[in-house]
Each structure stands twice: as structure tokens, then as C-alpha cells.
Length: 221
Image (cartoon, rainbow, N blue to C red; front, side, top):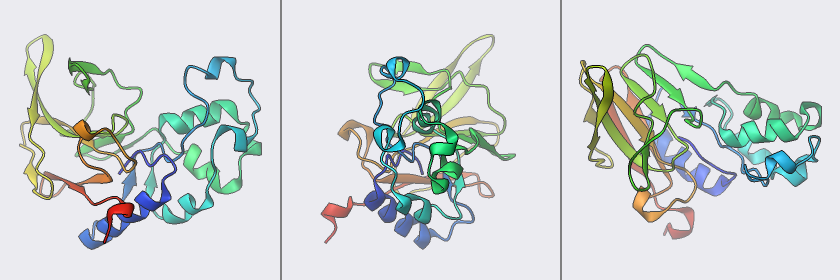
């Protein structure tokens, strides 16, 4: 799961869905917080800002993410750049100090903001040219539920095949293939990027990925 942006209600909804799936490990791919200082404003913002001015620090986020493997996103990067670490509430530090990636033999898990993004068509971006080990690159940042297969083309750029996302249906990842998995976002996203809150289950043993979503908390009956 990824891109919570401080929305604890949607995070609870996702965690409820994940608990029903009995996964071995939950990985949060960053942007747990929502930084109040935009990326274009950072250069003019004095280092040493008060935490309350830079982001909304809700301790419930840390409680809900207890036991979850954390990866740092660009919101956490921005907070680190604006607030001296000693001024951060103690419970926030594991979140803002999380590593930039998590690797297994099967996949690289990261937020995605440092990746080389390619615009496949207007508004549709994919880190197709990223160098990653294993079979899959699993990322967030773009707030879209999507799956791509990468096809090498000699020395030229890889060809990108967009595969259909069928929520709740496992998609096999071929042993000789390389894939990019955008897991979708916990926070609300544009309608053309798929429903939210969303997440994905990567079954490394079975070599499948399954996208999931659940109704937003306000729409639950």
C-alpha cells in the first residue's frame, strides 16, 4: 500500500481488507504524511520550520502502521528537508527515516519519486526505464492502479505493454518477464486512475499480483 497522505480513515479501511487476506508482510511504500509545504515552495522556506507548520502529525498513523515495513516517500523527504530531526515528535522518526526501498529476490519495492518516469501517453506515466533487479518493480507515487510488462528491444528503449487490471483477480508474472506494478493509492485519486482506497498483493511464491480496492469509509453501509 502507498500514498496515505495523512488519511487515517482510509488507512483503517485498507488494513481491514489486508487482514482478511492473511498476508505475510505489509509494506507501506511511503507518503504516509501530507506535507503542507509544496515542492515549489521548499526553496523559499527556511530550514527549521515548526512541525505543525510543515505537516499534520497524527500519532494514530504510527499506531496503525506498527509492524508494517516502511519505505520513505517524497512527502517524508520534504519533511526531513524542512524540520530538524530533534524537533520531530519521537513517533514520527521511524516514518520519516525509513529507507528508500525494500528488496527481495523477486522484486524491488519503493515509492517511486526518484525513478526515471516516461509519459506513455498524456497523463499516463510509467518508470519503464528504471533499472531494477528481480521480476518486478512495485511502486506508488502516481496514485494509479496499473500493471505493465516491459519488453526489451535490443539497445533501444523498452516497449511497454499495459496489462488490464482486474480487481481481485491474480495476474501471473511470467518467469521470463519484467513488470512494473503501480499499487494504487490509499488516499483519494482522480477517477481515471482507478478506485481508491486501493492496494496490491504480491505473491512472490506464486509469482502473481492482485490489485484490490475497498469503498471509501464515507460510502460504507
